[in-house]
Image (tube, rainbow, N blue to C red; front, side, top):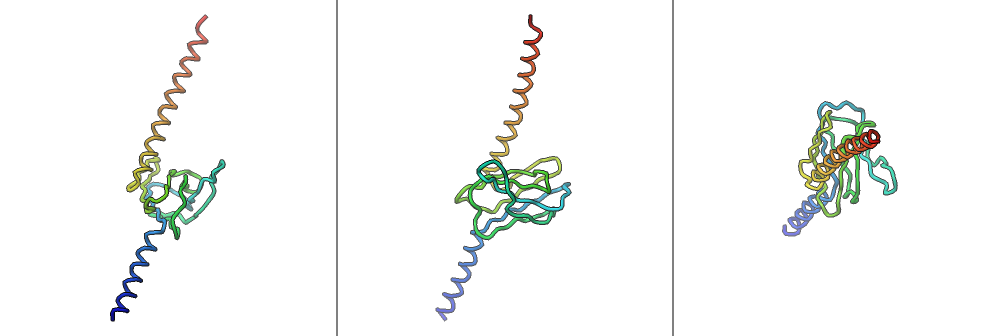
Length: 145
């Protein structure tokens, strides 16, 4: 009896442990039309390569057995980028993302990705302001004698 209980508890613990070591990305999208979702990995040189391709669904789930290596990833709906994400080592790899046709992206349970997204948005704002100031400066130089 004790042996059977030990084996049963070992099986339950091993299944829970193996579940915890898998990568799962839940994507909730509204207003997006596509045929497939491409989960792409940055090849550490200059481009992204497809890692996982699944059929499109408003509630899509990207899964991989085992943990995903740390790196920079991108999720595409056909050829349109939905969002980019970071995966770091030793972090939980069960992520939930909500996105819509207006390019609004919300990471529900990933603080580092939410911070990265806010940083990228702010960088775009600063780049726009810099371009406007550069144009204003160039125009002023051309009007001065």
